[in-house]
Length: 87
Image 1 (cartoon, one colour):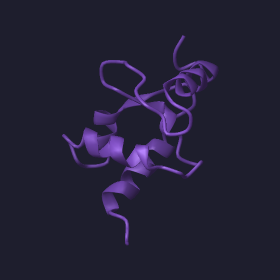
Image 2: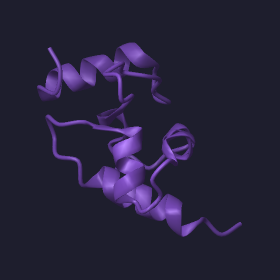
Image 3: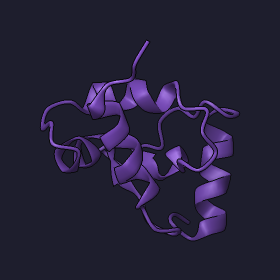
C-alpha cells in the first residue's frame, strides 16, 4: 500500500523540529498543508516506526505531553526533559 503524500509531509515537518523544541499536532498539520488535520497527524505519529522522525517532539496544543509509541508518555517526558524542551 502506497503511503499518502500527507503522511510524508508530516514526517518531513516533524524531522525539522529542532532538538529542545516542540510543536503541536495542529501546528504540524498546518505546516504539512492540512489545517484541521491534527488527529491525522496523531495517527501518523502513533504508527511511526522510523527513528529519524522525532515524534516525541509533537505534543498536544494544550501543552499536555500526550502518548508516545515507544514507551508511553513518561518516556516521552524524559526525552523532552533531556533535550531541554520541558522542565
